[in-house]
Length: 290
Image (cartoon, helix red, strand yellow):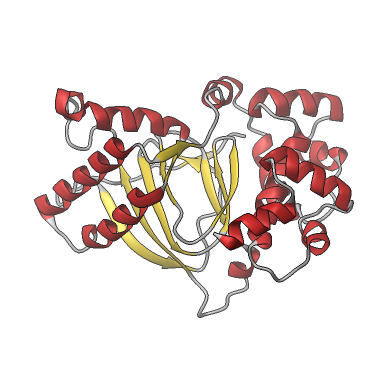
């Protein structure tokens, strides 16, 4: 999937990086990448998050550091597209270049841990545990500061994350090599097609038609560019949405399977367990209890 390249403007005479807290009807929903690293914290909101070849549901509290040129998109749940005035996504967004404090700063021995953090961010990092709680509170303070205080506070946040190691990598290590070498331009259309239609039946022929390819060529092309089959990709999108629905308690298991596009509930259960090593019922009990 070749994402849209966005050119950001994070530097000015007043600042060396960008940070802000915003309220939006829905998250920016185009598969894209940019040279700047991106630190995004969802304060309130839910949907499906794509980081490289990682596909997962996101909800309030989600915090992710995305590396330079790593394709990504946060796709809000469909209810956010219904233009309900009181329903908005609340988030903080921080974007910065690798050398925003100078080309040599993170190469200093004292900054090795941050250097390693930024290296790890090439796969996308989800911040976890007590570190996420701590950084969430400090992000509020960050947006209230100015000048050197703001800069020092952000560097301190990166340092705290790097030392805690309370994060996990999201995208597979081989994704960027495959993505950069294949340049899968046409699959970008397939990505959008799946995101807009995954709750309905989607045939391999329909996906191949979107890419303007025959089925055999499309399967080979998709696998080489994304490191997974089209069926795996489609099922992961559906399972990510199922995880969100399982925590809402508004539908039973069968209803959730159908809502996510699985017309055979036995198949839904099998795919879910293969992906998460839990049945839908076990996943629901585990997370609702916690």
